[in-house]
Length: 64
Image (cartoon, helix red, strand yellow):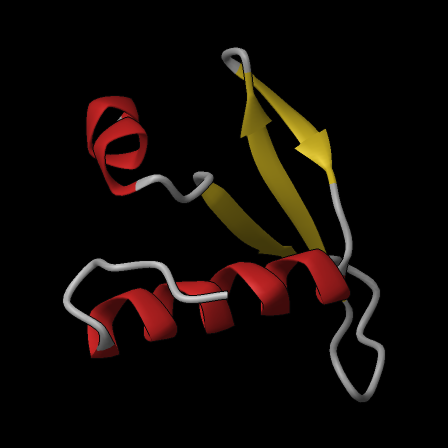
């Protein structure tokens, strides 16, 4: 999966639920950096998803 991420230009991320029975549920976001999972936050995860959607809509071309 790392080669797919490298080719796509977007970081590999994952979201894990945090135990504890909180309502609403709490999540922990992590990003792969040099082979290690590093804690991240919702804002970064949202940016990655939005950037990915933009790339899909533009056929992979980045427009700033």
